[in-house]
Length: 155
Image (cartoon, rainbow, N blue to C red; front, side, top):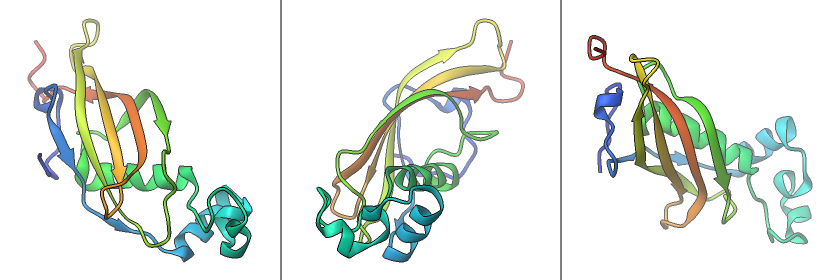
């Protein structure tokens, strides 16, 4: 696996290449603050109310987990030159993110397609798993992103 903060270009992407991000420690205050602003459902804002739900306790919004995943990828796990520009994607949350979780992201390049019409870029399919400190998968995403070629590499 590769952990890097050097900008990544299309030439750096190869099917099977893996990347791992740094970590982010969750806590109840973060979960509640995000939920109050963006996903105000009781199981994201109140542990007592969450006890009676299928979560059985306070759980982060899936969108909160997705936002942290994005930050981890941009800052330490998948620093694509020019930023991660999504074209399409799919996301699933097989387990809830809890206040005691420490998140990290493991990503793998699934497909690399240089553009025929725009020689300065290509499309890369990335599958990422956001995991907690126990290795449990909390989020799975498969996204197609636009990745620039290294300057001067386009012919």
